[in-house]
Amino acid sequence: MEPAARARLYAFLSRLFAREIDDGFAQVLAGEQGRAVLPAFSRSAECDALFPVERRQAIFDTDFANVTMVNAVPYESFYRREDAMIESGAVNPLSTFLRAYGFEADLEIARSLSADHLGIELELMAILCRKEAESSGDEALSARAVQRKLLEEHLLAWAPIYLLAVKRTARTELYRDGADAVLHLLHQHHEALA
Image (tube, rainbow, N blue to C red; front, side, top):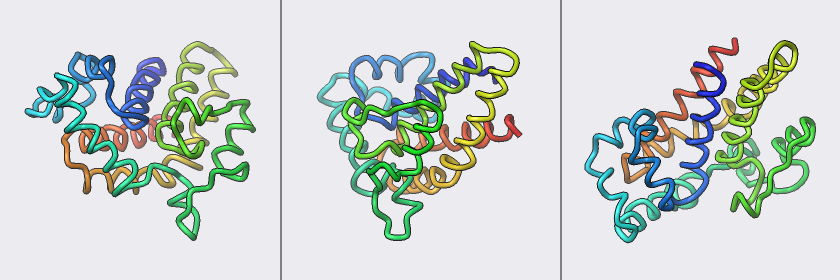
């Protein structure tokens, strides 16, 4: 997969796990990209529940809360700390990673408690893939090296556990299919970088 296509895929999946579905993202889910990335959801009767907004909110907002706050926790530190607490301070491992490479996460815009939220980590990977796509030579190689480090030191160290919890506890095909898509992308991308 080309870096630009991988960047679009990471951005799409970041959006899926970052916040509830609004009208614009509902259109994307019902469109060509949604059908390509989430085939099981697209074939299910749930796809018809994206509209009207009241129906969408009743079904998908409830499950979003279920898979991001109630039954599963989308924060790296929760899975990596011995006390299973979310690390929101400056010692958060992803915050350290972000600072080392000149990135900053706006937690208010991301509606996140901490920089190590799955949606933020996937969006960071989208940015790195776009950087690779727009670069050549040593700059492209450098972007690939940072992608690999983000995958190996962060995403692959915890996200599969979270995504398996999503698959087990999600009430909708949307989030089960989304979890499968993220798992596949992470492993496929890591293989391509190796």
